[in-house]
Image (cartoon, rainbow, N blue to C red; front, side, top):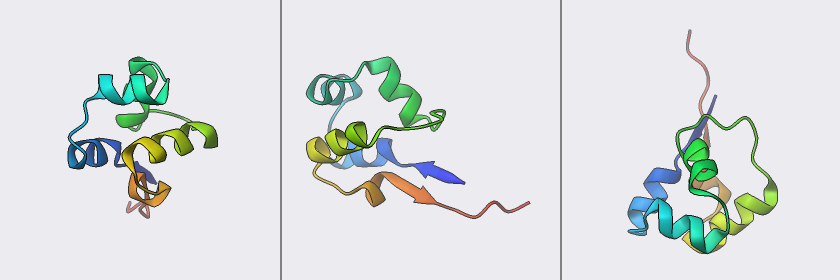
Length: 69
């Protein structure tokens, strides 16, 4: 399972969803879908822009955890 830690990185950078949205050029609605982990895919260009603005790596935002059933 892929876990999205976008909210963690935003908190560390003290950045709101609205600010990130305007700086990355993505709608708040689409960022919200990504932040809540409901996105089915993410473009590399989007991930690149988010990492550039938050000064982080994709591994800081995306985390893999094995499903435990």
